[in-house]
Picture 1 (cartoon, protein in one colour):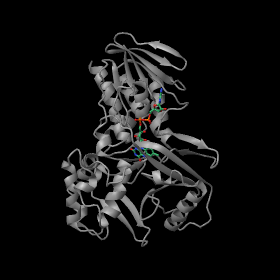
Picture 2 (cartoon, helix red, strand yellow):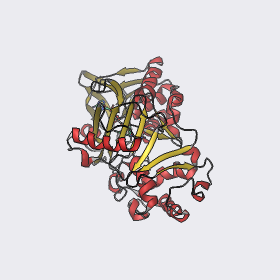
Picture 3 (spheres, protein in one colour):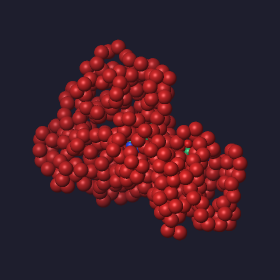
Picture 4 (cartoon, helix red, strand yellow):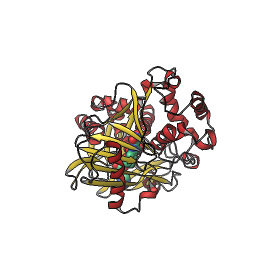
Length: 412
Ligand SMILES: Cc1cc2nc3c(=O)[nH]c(=O)nc-3n(C[C@H](O)[C@H](O)[C@H](O)COP(=O)(O)OP(=O)(O)OC[C@H]3O[C@@H](n4cnc5c(N)ncnc54)[C@H](O)[C@@H]3O)c2cc1C
């Protein structure tokens, strides 16, 4: 039995690892010259350092992502505080606070003024529980209050980060799913974790090494141009460099972005609206006492990450910034970074990375367009953060989708 995995993003890599554990003959075909897809690192010539295409944050409740990293031995490279702590600053008034979610399931932090968000009341928090039972067609703001200090200072930043979609149009069900797996499970499931060494070093390279050790063939720079679909089967794969026959008993996992999947298999219904993420990187040493991650409210910037010799900013749902002039955008962002960190006004070396189609728009309508892992072709399976994982487009969703597709093949 051979399984061909198309796409070496995290979904494809997770699928390949799960299959290789079971001794299947696995072949990975990736169009780009490097693996990782939307979760990758590269050398930036302007900064003359390796950067990530975007800062990626996991929470300790992301169990599939952690299992994926553990399998390749890379989980130990994730960094984060020992407890669920999030430093915040409000750029409007300069107020700073640290949200401290207690480890246990009982939300004691809500009752403690020193742990919860300043200006909020206990009752505010309980109203958000409604998301846990939200109906499919509802948006976040149709389900819970979208105003007031709790919304502005915690809920909006968290939902924007998790869903990459404005809460007024974002799916309440997807927000509820994130909440059920993190906040509702207490601080143990909410520790922020990130790859300080770089996305490639943590999420991609160890997985590739693990796969190669198990004789999985990984072809980079090999784009799938077409699938030959006859009756209820894929019978051949046509790549830019040749054709591969798919024999009886062989399977294919399509782990490519949704619009590519639809070009290859026009019958598929997939999400077709997307949201951008903008990252700005500045080559400078962060102040010694600066936390690894800081949430920023009432500014253009939303999250500020401190790396070695680099400060890096994430702005979600950033379509409004796609056409902004790069230099003035960098200036605007740096002014805020300088205000938050106390660093000088003069701008260090910078780079702006705009990912136009960072994730599908996590609206109820787009969520309803997500297909499951099975297709009407018996040996063709789908994987990717855009498939029906029950989660928004995240690493956790991508890994789960890969595992699911692999498990279906193993079960068959
Ligand atoms: C800037 C940014 C910030 C993010 N931040 C976070 C975060 O903080 N936390 C989080 O959990 N998630 C975050 N995400 C989302 C996360 O990166 C994605 O959910 C995840 O990487 C998706 O993996 P995937 O394998 O589903 O898709 P992709 O990474 O898109 O992989 C698809 C692969 O298929 C390949 N391919 C395409 N066409 C073909 C073809 N014809 N033949 C062969 N191969 C092909 C592509 O080159 C690619 O490698 C972020 C995303 C971005 C862009």
